[in-house]
Length: 133
Image 1 (cartoon, helix red, strand yellow):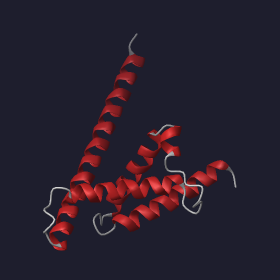
Image 2: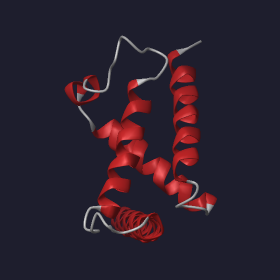
Image 3: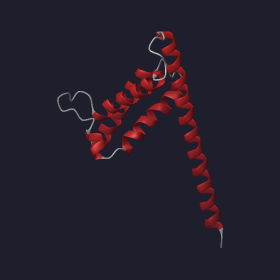
Image 4: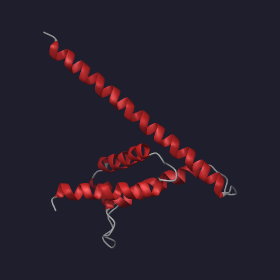
């Protein structure tokens, strides 16, 4: 299998694992894609040392990207309940996690939209500049 095919296969496996992990909190498939895209984007932003942190030669059945994705989604789950008193019940924790995930997805969607607008403006300026004498 070529390297590009391996990368695609790995990304698909990671996407499925993320969706399985978040499907109760993020039900909309479009929102799930936003989360998966964010996780993969963050992975690609890591330098070699950052990626190496997720390598585990003793357990090669899970890739470093898979470990990173699990850690990332678990960190969001922990952040969701971080401010709750320990005495709160599981229902309150689930409700807090749901609100937190919804907020996270809204932030990701807003950032994506800002990026689209900026790219559109840049393309417009480039087009105008190309038309200018």
